[in-house]
Figure (cartoon, rainbow, N blue to C red):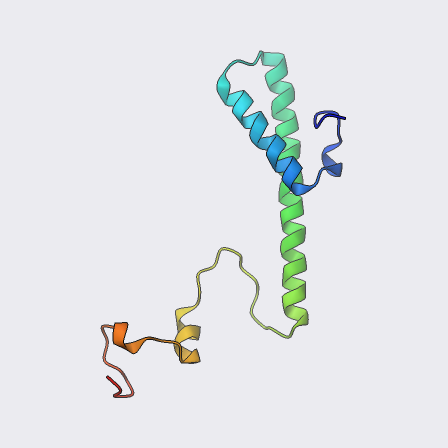
Length: 106
């Protein structure tokens, strides 16, 4: 069974994303007839929605696992490390800082 014949809901994330990328390439080529383009665009929108749903479910599961471990911070996959938390943890390299060492250890 080809990807086009397979229900979007049955596709694992990687397969759905791969098919979505193929459709985007096909549509961007400009070599698709209008009827076919509309069909492919509709399939692409279904795939995008499915991928977003799978990602949201994975993020929710990760947040649940983190909270089950007693960690009070929320999981943010794209968040930069908190410099204040690093400073409070004692991992700051004061020699690399432009500021004076508040503990007089320079």
